[in-house]
Length: 210
Image (cartoon, rainbow, N blue to C red; front, side):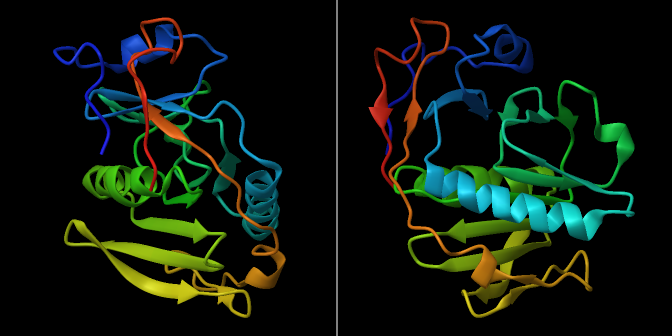
């Protein structure tokens, strides 16, 4: 578990977030700021790129689009995240600078330092915000979990491996061969809790290992 941010009496908002340096990656969950590792690994990005390509091909001609990170998603004034991939189907959510409101699908690719963040903090946030479908991709375990929101909580609809096709409850004709996706080894990544109003993430931060 991480320690509170240095200014524990301060809750950060969308306005604060918009004022932070563009070359630093942050997320806000319930007003708490989390510093993300500045650069993903090649392995992580290969998975994101492969999924992005498959989803973009599938969604061609449909009223939906897929966007890879970094893309800000504002779920509330105190909840701003950058999922690895998102699918949205409501054009009014596209605010040019960010997506506003819950996407139809959110996808996170796990790494050793982000599992707690993705499996706990962001899972609860996405459920609270009303994201209907959440994919958790585990490169180390060679596993993709497809979670569906029901009565305000996620249930696992599918747990799939490299020999399976990824299927989506939102799009019943989707078939993505996971042999094309789960082909690269994981690499260490980090999520740190900190204070973006200070000098980067230099002080008062703690690495959060999943």
